[in-house]
Amino acid sequence: MEQDTRVRNSNSDWETLPDKVALQLNDTHPTIAVAELMRVLVDQERLDWDPAWEITQRSIAYTNHTLLPEALEKWPVAMFERLLPRHLMIIYEINHRFMRQVSTRFTNDVSRMQRMSIIEEGHTPQVRMAHLATYGSHSINGVARLHTDLVKHQLLSDFYEMFPERFNNKTNGVTPRRWLLYANPGLASQLAERLGSGFIHDDLSALTRLVEFADDEQFLSELHAIKADNKLRLARMLERIAHVSVDPCSMFVVQIKRIHEYKRQLLACLELLTHYLRIKDAPSAEIVPRTYIFSGKAAPGYAAAKQHVRLLIDVANVLNADPATRHLLRVVFVPNYGVSLAQSIIPAADVSLQISQAGKEASGTSNMKLALNGALTVGTLDGANVELREAVGSENFFLFGLSVEEVQDLYRRGYAPWNMIAGNPELARVIGLLGSDFLCLGDPDRYADVVHGLRHHDHFMVCADFAHYVSTMRDAAALYATPREWARRTVFNIAGASRFSSDATIRAYAREIWRVTPVKAELR
Image (cartoon, rainbow, N blue to C red; front, side):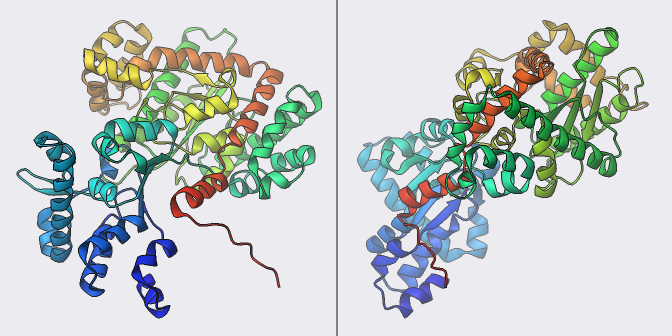
């Protein structure tokens, strides 16, 4: 450790290390740092165990970024024995002392000890890295208020009962330099003209004053013009990189994020297919043109997520080629998603899809970036959506779907997706479309796994939220048809999203976890 040398060279007492060093564990990937710091202090520096453990706990803090199993790593004991035998010995000793502490606090509660143990026994013993991180840290935080509540009362409830003072929340934020000043210079200039430039460099929350201009006709007209310019630029880029021509006057519906079943790109796909079938059924109806823009990457081994990417691309190819609907509906899956691409898409978005199943998203940051750039959110009460809706006002947020409590209650009562499908002709019809070869001529079984999953499992309750989502998207389109009111609501979204600055988040980490104060650099 580089800090070892610094502490030694400064002749500092090791007990002062927590006053000079803060080690932040982001998820469980770096949790081995707990055992490594103990190894350094006990083996190399010859400290007794108790003072070494106190130093370790005071130096380390743990941020949980997701409730999903893939970020709650479990490392096989056999691997430790082969690669890190001394670290395993230290972890065993940590766990032995921890189990004595648990047993003393909760006398002879064997089941609790089994739940809290750092070592998971069984056919293949494993080290629960989340438990090691939690016990080895003086602070444990989630990244949105709802997420932190779920960490405290579900994921790590036993630890929260034992160490409530360690748990706290730090809602994520985004940097206004990149996601407003750099990505959307037209909007940034307009805001600076009205409010001054201090919100970029000093305090983004100054944007809350923007609500004073919510009924300023000139300001709303300027907002509309800036969005139109951003959409025209994106339309040109999509034609260049995705070879799809889109109408820049259409409603741009955007879902850009990691491809994952809980984020429910599949739900968005089913809704857009339903919209397509409605256009086919009533071609003479007055319909707001829509452009659906998707982008994101799936993990290399995540077969289901990759299948959803393939589905979106097949849907885009078929729908964009239909002469009866393509003037009203376009679908684009933009390849090679990354920050540079997001900087072009986000300023042009009209609708931000934040439609994860309630209780699955830790926070999300695309929701913040899109709202800050004037998009209106269609979303569930999940992650930071809860706080975003409070900040922008419930009337400026298109809410749909089951709450966390309703999801849990439905699971307890026994969720039967086939009943949802049987009771909704539109849902049954669109799932039937997936089960045919309409999207993949000559290959009717291509999406058989997707159809089977929806009908018999539907782990993320796509079918349960489908009807409400479809009607909410219809509401959003109806509002989009009234440009002045749409622009007015974007004002509240920009102003409310200013709550989610990474500057404020980092200040909270520094003040409440790391115990450091800012240093002002002197210009020479």
